[in-house]
Picture (cartoon, rainbow, N blue to C red):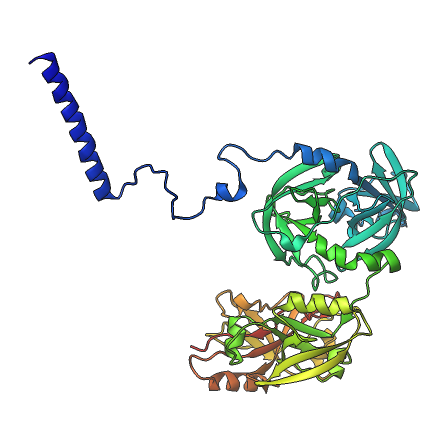
Length: 507
């Protein structure tokens, strides 16, 4: 075969292979490269404007904000007996203290540290309340210079504090951003002095918002934390959590010691809301209704025969407080306040708190299917305490499918535990892990006492009442079980924020 014929045959074979490949590719759904716009999902890289190999550098941002992030040192002098020298009262937050090891000291000094950041050129500094709480002296270090700081204001409920120093020049400070605009997945940077390693920078993303972690009874009604995987450690407390524009969007506050890189920060919008009161009055005064509340979820809405699940369910009304005086009752559902729709507990708490004591708000509530309006004159929040004791036990009974055991709540048991004199109900003594009520946070034993007082709006005054009412419930319906819970450790009395309406499905 001639050279020309061989070349022609080779070209024909190649052309045939290409044509066959196109046919096979089409039949198998294999996409060929094209310059046409794909109608599929948007590429995440296109959204953030990056590339597969290029991540943002935080070096310029870290360098820019560093002068406004400061070290905070607080000290406390205590009078104690020699044998009572032990762990520092700040040990949980700050680690070990330094102390005088003389044989019989009458005093010891506990030193603790944290972080803060400047928010004005004239020397206003934000940090955590737990960093400076009960301190006799607070010092801050900016660069190589140390200042004595005055505690201008503090708020235990949000764990925030405002310090002030006198400087002979304008100081660099950080801008406050908008934490409401954050989304899970946004880049953030934490700066501080963890474990005394100064000027430490860590980066990560916003892992979640609106977290409640129950740090203390003081904070539980106001916890609304930003969760982040930017590393936060002891000593980071009070430092800034920043967005890519260098704006503060959170105040680093707590960590989950059982996990890696699960940290929490107070949203900066919480700071912005209370900052004027901290600056002008040194404390925060909040409006207070005197109720325990929970979100109206799907199960609760179904149990109350509602078509929607927006609103707030009242699970407790405290005697003698504003809501009780205005005639509100547990099982009322708050749907609006001053004409503003109430979506959840967070919105109601924030709005009422911001009005301050002595204000009056109008609540629109659903009560047994009817809309009612109530005007409530707010008071100022205070703390309630209860003294614990050991009760005398009664015989137990149980309901197998509910997975609970219970007993009569007699007068002697109520008195021994310091419970209200007029409290009637059934004391829950055991809750099985397989109980449908376990998933709804019903617990028994330890310092928490749970008392069932109603089933389907009917009062429960005895074990016989409880069993009769549950036995009468229609199969496939949801029970409305009302539970009051008490902390009998001597720390807090009745627990107003624990969900007390439980909605198991009757088998």
